[in-house]
Amino acid sequence: MHRLRERFRARRERIRARPALNTLYRFGLGLLGGIVLLLGIVMIPYPGPGWLCVFAGLGLLATEFAWARHVNMFAKHHYQRWVRWLSRQHPATRLAVMTATGLIVVATLWLIGAFDLVGDFLGLQWSWLASPLFQA
Image 1 (cartoon, rainbow, N blue to C red):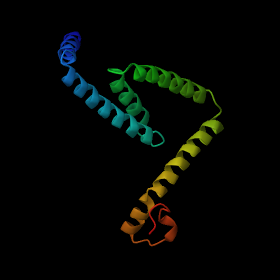
Image 2: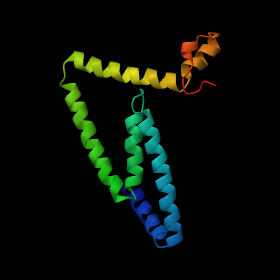
Image 3: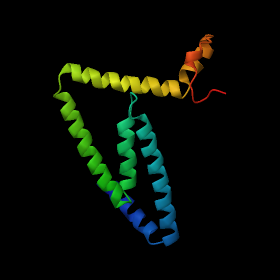
Image 4: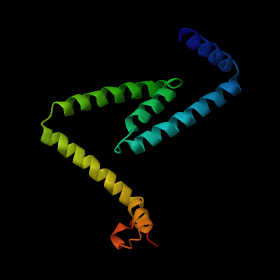
């Protein structure tokens, strides 16, 4: 692992020595990290890797941008604080948080039209399945 890290550092220094290539590298990494970060933020309330993508996006950005390193440390600290706080709470509180998260997921799926899509697939023509955002 140490040799791989040293090879990466040497390659990065060669890129840094060429201003145009360095700018292109930073732009590409910033774009990729930003996309991963935004996807992670969108996925946070859903079951799956939402927070993992947020931290991965920030980690990518942190390799080149100092502000991202600070945001990443801040976010990790507060995420861990939240998890510790939630683990100390009464089961009813944890259930309320899970319920609120579930309601956010259901509302978002309804708003993006997922229920209408499934309803059409199943042959259901119920008007309340349609998203108010996509009505003609």
